Length: 398
Picture 1 (cartoon, rainbow, N blue to C red):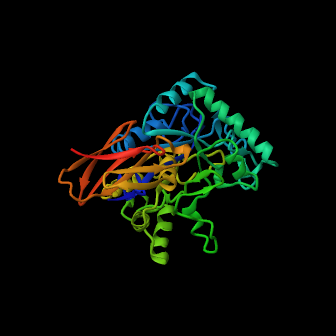
Picture 2 (picture 1 turned 90 degrees about the horizontal axis):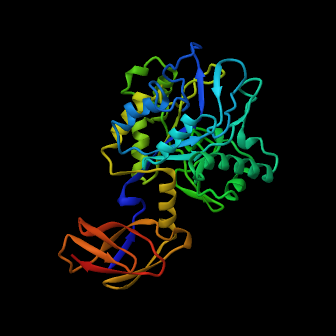
Picture 3 (picture 1 turned 45 degrees about the horizontal axis):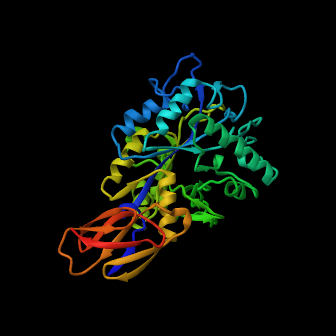
């Protein structure tokens, strides 16, 4: 009997993680007309018409119910890039009962994860170049930890849970940052925009595989939602479209070829977006779910031809740890045990079993804790189990 671990759940070719930054209790009234226009909401208007959520629900969630979204949430009063340029409502996530109720409602969805994205996102500058991202501002490890704990408590007061993962604001950090994440109990974190780092030819930091720093799972950001398909002519006269043409002409890259390459190599498809295009400095924030909406729909349609696993950050991190730290010991043709890290007890892992002399299309794995069904796919039996340390798994033919 030969047993193998599958790199991704359900033996998918790759996981897909839809990431939206700057989910916050914020409204940028770009038109200064005291009413919500499309694209102005960062989350404040909850499920109202033209809200961020309204756009996502009508254009993404309804059409692509398989998609799971990780919302990187600024829990305090989000600092503007600069002061005074636009009429802005910005408050903590605890300020409005309606927003707290909204957070709790979406947090119950299996397709949504509320992740951490700082208290204020940073410190306002006299111009956009002077704005300092949150993890750049800490002058000591102790200061960073204290600030993170304040932010975690704000989120806990809102939804009754601490965040399990998060992302550096603006992907910027300093020498205290990584250790501050490790020492505040996060399971996973997004440190780099790897797709952007690759464009800097002499930069060796980017990595499209999951990794770890200290005891934290490092999830890369691999797809720019504003890297438009050349098939989307609605953006023909935009700078972003001409950048796409440049990358195709000079570098031979298209959004389709990047996706194909990632999946061919079993790498994560993590799609980077923002909640709104509008900022305080009158500049458009790219990528964003409003400007990129047609491109996002194209991407999710394109992905349908592959066998993929749509997941949140925590689901991906937990599976990665189970895959990396589980060892399988075959006892005989019908029995095996697992050697696992105590932190992944009961987590899920997909396995593939090659076992001769079984005619059934289904086998059952029996354990003292629970049983699992594996289906015959080709010449192997595949299925997702929960991992238990030194517990015997026994094969029974159905």
